[in-house]
Each structure stands twice: as C-alpha cells, then as structure tokens.
Image 1 (cartoon, rainbow, N blue to C red):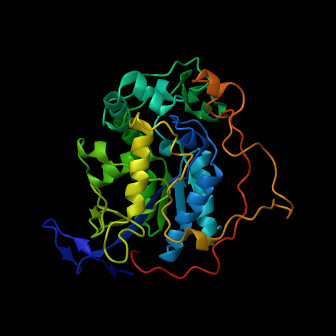
Image 2 (spheres, helix red, strand yellow):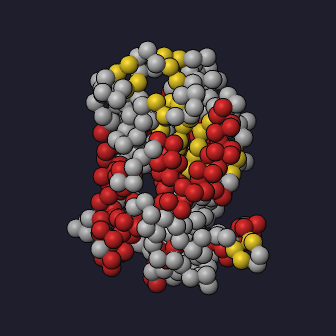
Image 3 (cartoon, rainbow, N blue to C red):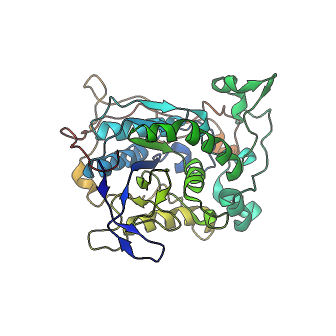
Length: 371
C-alpha cells in the first residue's frame, strides 16, 4: 500500500504529493553499563543497565504509538543491542518477529581507547583529538595490542573470523572502516529484505548506525562529524523505489529521516533530543563538569514516561527479583586501575536478567505506508 507523506523538496518546501515505497527504522541501543561508566565500549559485550532497559521500553512505546509493525530486526552480536531489540518487540507485542544478529553490525572497534574513561582521554589527549577519534570519517584511534583481553579477537565467539591462522577482527577502526562492512551487509542482506516487502528495523550502535546513514543518505565526510544519534530514539527513513532516502519534513539535522515524536504537536523541535545530545557532549568534552551526567538526571525521550508504569519487582517465577549486585556496579579493581584486562566478551561488570514490566497492551493496529 502506498501512502502520501509530507516530504521536503530541495528548495525547502513541503511536497505532500510524493509517495514513498519503503520504510525502515533505525534504533540505537539503550544505556549499557559502560555507557553509564562513560567508557569507550567498542565490541566489549557490556550489559544493559536498568535505565537502558527503560530507554528501550520507551522506544518500543514510541513505535507502538505510531502503530509500527516489523517482519525482521537486524542487529549486532552484542547483547546491549540484542536485548534492546527484544524489549522493543515486547512493547510492540511482536515477540514472534525474528531478530537476526551479525558481526557486520557490531559497534566500531575503538582500539586502545576501549575501557578508558572518555573525559580522562580528553584530559590526556585534548578535546579536539578525542572528537577526531570519535566522529571523523577516516582517522582511527590507536590500535589495541593483540595480547589484551579487551581485544575481541581473543574472544572465542569470533573464532569464525579466523583466516589462514590470523584473526580478521580489527585492532581499531575508523568510520570508513565500519562502513565497508556495514554497507556490504546493507547491500547483501538488508536491502533485499526491504525490496521483498519486509518491514525492517535495524537496532544497533551509534557509530555503526552513523556509517549506515552516511552510506544510504550520502552524508558528506565533513557533515558526518556532526551526526550524533541519541540512545533509543527511533529514527524513521522513507525510501523510494531505488532505496534512496526521501527527505521528511521533520528530518533531523544532516539526515533525511526524522525521529518518532519529533517535532512536538505544535511543530517545535522536541527539547528532549537536544537535552540528550547536550548531556552526551558535556559528559565527554566539558572538563568543568566533574559529575558523571549518565548517573544523574538522565533525560529520557518520553513526554509521559510516568504513565508507562514502573517495572514489576518480580522474577520469572513471580517471586522477589534478585541476583547480582547493584545495577551498573563494577567488581574487582577495574575502576581503581583505569584500563582493566577484562575479556572483551565477559567484562567484570555485575549484570542481571531483563526485569519484568507492564508490557504493551493489546494487539498492534496495522500501519499504513510502504509495502
């Protein structure tokens, strides 16, 4: 079924007569334990925090409010993205939808920065250098040593990437490197699924998603420096018959797609998106801010979050929830020594199962648009 949508022309005017052939949704994962600790994560398999699960739940509620339905979710091999996909589908009451994982959608390998606190890196190397490592197109951070337990090549789950006795797991990556693998997966797997009529969601990581958006949206090397994706705020793209993005009237800066729920009903930009992005920038680059902003007053993108209800404090058998230490706590000497030597697959961070909550009620209604 084709649907008329408001699209912005090159001249900046809204053209309501054009139609889109396809629709795809991108969602960054919720807060992980290493997001909360403000550390470079990369391929480290950090757990979702309880806050991260709530963020994922809000993402599902936002999609439910717009009656989205999916046939498949593509995601990485990292649990923070996988569990975000699970929670989103749970809120949509679409638990039957398959979640396909693949290493091509893994986060960028941050090399020797993995495990290091971001603001400490700014103190050591300067804000401009750290921004280049985090946001530039073709400049990677320093490589990680192969002997480090934080190098994912030492994780057995990636043994399938061995070739001629050598691991093909990267020691570090630029965004250009990430796009070489993510674009191949788009061309060979995701794009054919979209063309076949499947309703697709890609649940991933900020840099992996930035690389995909650069590829499909033709974002310049200069503009990609300024593209930042807030956690767990669904980003919707409309595509034409050739899978070229069609700019939405509510498109985000430098992008053709728009965030669900942005702008607000009166047409003004949603203040929560700007607040989240400003928090993230301050938490990395502003040395005058001594508090870890991930731990205090985390802004969520939900105008009526309190109406969603709080998690049930029960386990799978109906008893009190238990297991594990405090959410987000570290064990051992990691915080004392700075960069620890935890396995990239099993960081020494306490974790607990997904908590239970009041799931999205009722059946989803069919969403028009696309094919």
